Amino acid sequence: MKTYILRSEDDKYYIKDTKLLKDENELKFVSSQIAFLKALAKKPVSSDIVAKTLKISKKKAEDYAARLNKLELIKISGKKEKQIYSLDSGAVSLELNDSESKFNIREKRIKDSGTSRFYSNFIRDGKFDGYICVGSTDPHGEYRAVSKDTHHAMYLTMFLGQFIDLPVKTPVVLDTDVISKNLFKNNLIVIGGPVTNLITRDINSYLPVKFIKEEGWGLKFRDGLHTRDYEGVIEKMKNPFDKTKEIILLAGVRNIGTFSSILAATKFSNLSFASYNGEKPWSMLVRGYDIDGDGEVDSVETVR
Image (cartoon, rainbow, N blue to C red; front, side, top):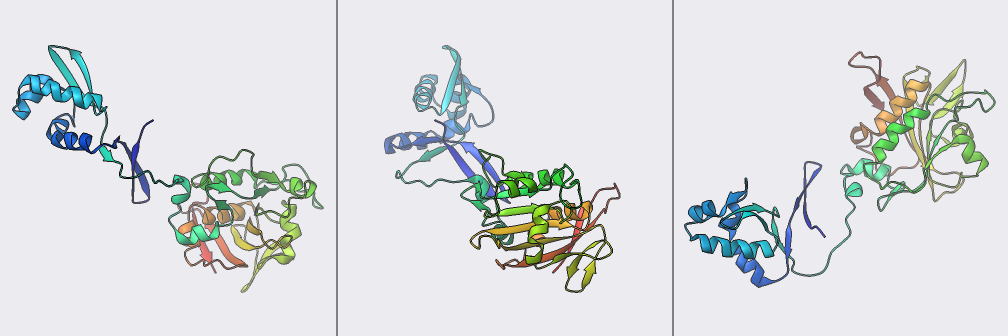
């Protein structure tokens, strides 16, 4: 079994294999051979060069190498008359006791506290708790609408995949599945507006920012009705069907508005949720922009 040193720096993780020692005598010997090991740090070295570098006899170099090889710190290759030594381990560690704790790298990576709080009910012990609900791509509902938001869920799942293990069963479900299988009493991340996602339709009356049908659909924000295609919302509230669960809505007036909301909740989550303190209900208006002019939304503006 390999043992590693894990180092965290600038929101990245670095690992190095290490030889784990439990015997103090082994550690004392290895400590006396630091110069020997450092001589091999950059590339494999012959026994002749090691002896010359350390100013010891070739016999001593071979004896030391044999012990270090037995401890699995170096590898020995080549012919007996000219052995070649190379490092077998990048570090040495001493285990002082048997206590250890389970570490989930994905969960620990949620550095931003606002993002962590926002998704806290959905990410537990490195597992995803709930369902991601997208609109069906078949004509459905009173408008016989076909969802064009479904593929945007992939961006969200890629984001969440940084923090969770791969689920045994897919947590992505259609709005029609939530209805037919009665999945309402779960944590839900709902994607898309009330025309293409029937769950948004069913929870619309509970939302802090509601969708209003008034000469086309719009979002009733505190400063008026927002109807521009690139506008959307991020909303979070207690699940009205089970108050111990939560619902997150990522939706827009049009398809581009929905993607703008997803972008704000993922790529720009550190900015979107910087001041989020666990409020429920909570809402944020989002506007998506194509800054680099390639025809796709790549930046967002948020309004609380």
